[in-house]
Image 1 (cartoon, helix red, strand yellow):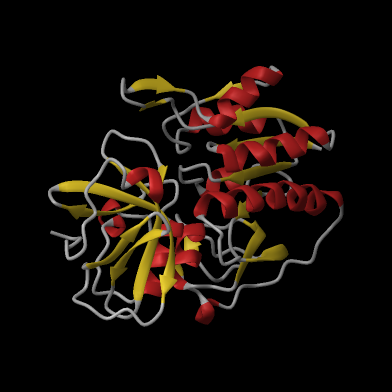
Image 2 (cartoon, rainbow, N blue to C red):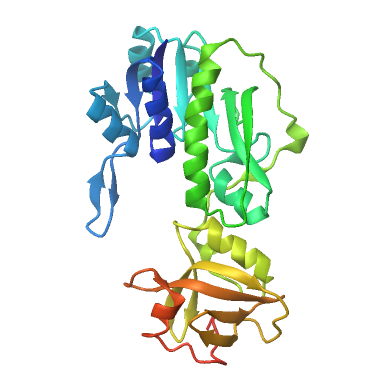
Length: 305
């Protein structure tokens, strides 16, 4: 099948790889312009650009798809489908009308739950028991198109945004290949059941110890690896990468109730949190036993101040 592919991060690269393995002809790849990254803020190619370059695929990085010249370029290729995965730019209806099969999106949730930009993190924050991949026929709305194919995956107690991302990326690749292999009957979404996965604000990663411990533990997993859940202690920002709920802890929220090689127990609004992997500004992620060897975690100190 003649495919134009639009995507940017690793999640999208996994889908592009799956399409190529399945033997589809990807006649054009669209990805976001290179963006500054790292300490030097040097422009870095997206994961999709790196893969397309490695495979010698035609590549464009337009700042917008609303330009008629871009639409004409795509139309000249006479694509069967425009496959979109975590692209990051609005696809105008005039472009969706170009391919024979229209635009087909790979979305990392079980639509209509978690439409929008951050479905993986929002599912973790909400304590959902499962999520999955939806292959969707694109329309002018925000993830509102008809469902072509879905498959669920459970969310484990130890899943982080990274582990869930990796599993969903692999699943998305498999499902888009299946969706293109045979005609599917579109199914309308139930708009009344829709929820929205707003873009993550870095301020959400700052821990409020008045929250219950279970909610904070989900926050830790939802923001691993980006932006990382954090709190202040003695004027130093500490990122918390792994923790577990400790029942029956009662003290003012943020108080360190225990500090040892088996973990640092911090009181929350309900129960407590045993911190197991930590990082200070400029340092490395460390197991708690190594972290407290070089940082004072005395009892009665308070996080959040």
